[in-house]
Figure 1 (cartoon, rainbow, N blue to C red):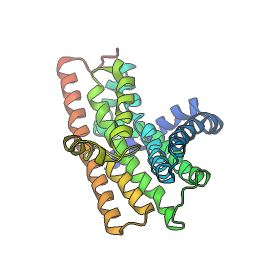
Figure 2 (spheres, rainbow, N blue to C red):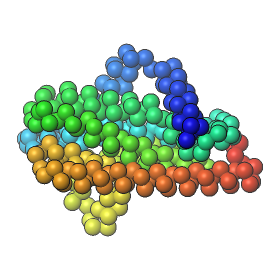
Figure 3 (cartoon, helix red, strand yellow):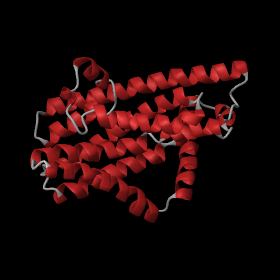
Figure 4 (spheres, rainbow, N blue to C red):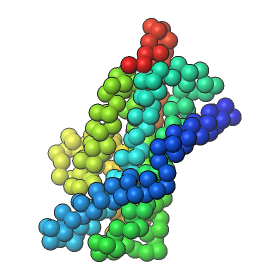
Length: 264
């Protein structure tokens, strides 16, 4: 366990070093954060154009939470980038499981996503007349963290399957978070989709967590909120387990056929 935590810590330090080399607090605030806030405002304005405050509420809350998913799935780029740059074999030599190394690579981006989503939750609702149940609404950022962790495990799992195809990492990233935004209740209720598709969305991250946040804001039963959050945790754990198996298979195959240093 000590080795696992040590490797996770150094992975986090390396992630922060890379992150801070490309972004300062000014560039993060005035480029990345502002871009995400404008995206959420765009969808809220669609609700306003429809002349329905209910639609404004639904679209804004959904996209505020979806902001976090964009940053959380960036772990796909970071993880696959290790193989693309030829450093995968060095990471495999770390005194821990391979999954621990990869999990540490994108934790800063996960924190960035949670910070951006929380900022949007605090700033945007008053601008669009969305009423929140303060002070109880202060618990929503904690729910966003739960959803973020689940999306992060999902992104790590996707990365484990894309490791063999490094050139497809951008496509995988875009499809991954767009699938969440499309099918998980961000802009349209999951009830809109046919039963077979709803069954698939139930095992995607953010579906249950977003439902819990919506129920909480609407003043719904606490048992329903907790049940949805528990389901979100289970979904994240399932994606984590699949990622662990997939990473181990990839590493064993790479060692066996000599492709672990493949970097193109």
